[in-house]
Image 1: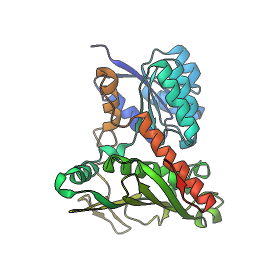
Image 2: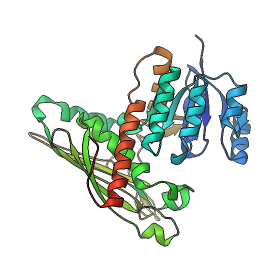
Image 3: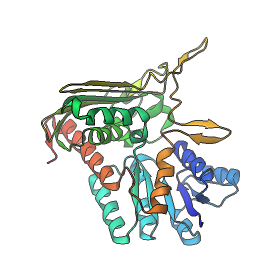
Length: 338
């Protein structure tokens, strides 16, 4: 059977996971990589013995490709997405779909015109714990959701060291997009309005003009409410690079999930670590886990014409919430979404 030809745009931290997934998928042929940093692009291309391009337009002009993975920085998803879509390519985009509602709608409109699939890598939907939480809330015996809580936080090294573009993003876009998607995915409800408060101090003191932490209250269509907390200023000594928790009160059930409790603890004289071995684990240079599953599932969707679990519309709805949260932060008032 003919293999699906892919290319990866953005070969940084997460782009490397896309590359590994494609190299080890029997239905895929990875044919090229692209990155706006020529030195990094050449290094990865030489390592893979594949063509490397600093321009996606050049790649699309020269290579016969079916699927483009976009793993560029948060603020830079729109242009490569539109370029790929205009050439009739299916596109898998790292969350968020884009960092404005207008950009999201432009991507969706282009995909509809050109008849291509756009998926968003909301990999938390594939987390076994999330799947089990969703199943529990959908049990008839649980009743309706009364209130929910989701938090997702990163250590301060993420915005200060890992990401050179954190001032152009926020914990809302970088982490909250995951959480808002999970609220919709778990509850099956749309968000009616949001109210948000936040703090700016620690990162501003380091010359990074973005939010340290944001707390958002979401009112849902059915009258239930959720609190979502996102920040990226946890101490670097925290046992994991990130933390995440879920708690949901239903009529007849109380459901909790703690991402720190994954059954693995590694203690050394310097630090105790609690790595998430379910997310992405490499064995013999092959990645597996719920961070890889969405990439392979997108290939299945393209190959078989089957639905993909996280659609462009899901990306749009998460970005609508992110944008509303920022509007609430600036105005100090609730913001209606519907």
